[in-house]
Length: 135
Image (cartoon, rainbow, N blue to C red; front, side):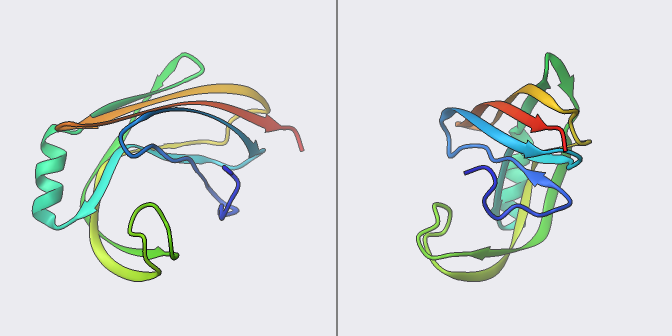
């Protein structure tokens, strides 16, 4: 499931909708990773409220990695029917915000990634086992 609709130049990993999850994913060699610790979309005011309490951490193979804060950036959301975010097919513009991590391509082998994030009463946690096969 992790490989569905991925781009060739970056591999996106996902959080959760407020639960704890464990996932196993095969990641292609030579592709950087990107993922949120915690994020949302809405109005600029929604983002300001959300970001005022946003915090999180990511740990790759036992090493903490840094996140970047993104504040109320205009984004286009494209969705398919039945998706878990909007439930409908179509596109619209909103403001996105959150704490995001971008990592260089991991070396071949197995890696552990722990993602934790929260804002207000909303929290997420994902433990990934990532396998990168040598080309």
